[in-house]
Length: 85
Image 1 (cartoon, rainbow, N blue to C red):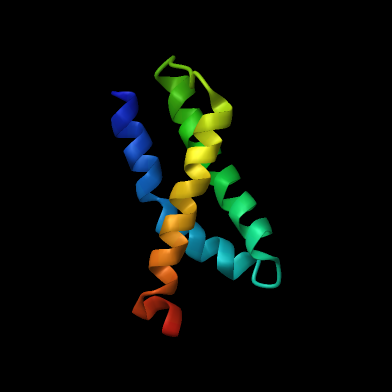
Image 2 (cartoon, one colour; image 1 turned 90 degrees about the vertical axis):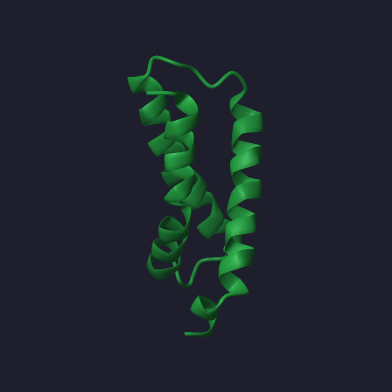
C-alpha cells in the first residue's frame, strides 16, 4: 500500500489517540500527554512503514511534523464542543 495512504490513516487515528491519552494520563502534563500520543502514532506509522518496506528518510523532521499535527488536533479538540463536556 502507498506510504501516503498509510500515513494519512495513521493521522486519522489522532483524535481518538489524543482523547484516550487524555483519559489515561489525565494528571500528566500536556507535554507528557503529547509525548505519549507521538509515541503511539509514531509506532503505528513505523509498523506500517516496516510492512511496506519503506523507511522514513529523516525521523527527526518526521517527529517534528507529527508534533505540529498533534498540536493542531489538540487545538481543534479544545475549541470544540468535545472540550466542554
